[in-house]
Each structure stands twice: as C-alpha cells, then as structure tokens.
Length: 81
Image 1 (cartoon, rainbow, N blue to C red):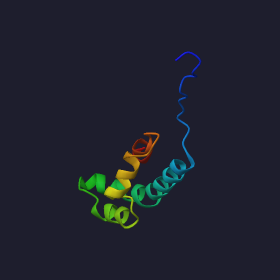
Image 2 (image 1 turned 90 degrees about the vertical axis):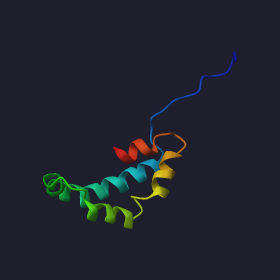
Image 3 (image 1 turned 120 degrees about the horizontal axis):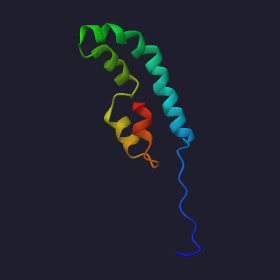
Image 4 (image 1 turned 135 degrees about the vertical axis):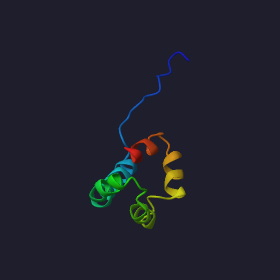
C-alpha cells in the first residue's frame, strides 16, 4: 500500500446530521425538559411525551433505523446526545 494516503477520519457532522441534531434538540427543549421534573418525581414513564415524539417521527423504528445505518456511524450517538 505504499503511496496510498491513510483514510481520513473526522467527527465533523454532515449537514444532515446537524439538521437532525437541531430537530431533536428543539423537541427536547420544547417538550421533554418542561415535563421532565414532574415525570422524574412520579417515577413513571412519560407516555404523553413519547406520544408527541411518535407524532413527529422521532420515536419510531424508521428514525432509529435511519440513524443506525447513517454512513458515518454517528447518527444514533448524535440523536441520543
């Protein structure tokens, strides 16, 4: 392999990943964070929050599948962050 340059590695997010990250973050700010203290105190699953996430496609097999198969391998990590 002499003469071949090593494969480059970057954690720079693609425009698609940045868009997804911002979309998930916006949902967290608007829906999850305001409800979190109540649901934490009750120690219950926040079904209304999960229903809202499902309505916009955030809580779905399609979303998680797309992130799992995202070419850089960062989709799931960015979504969970």
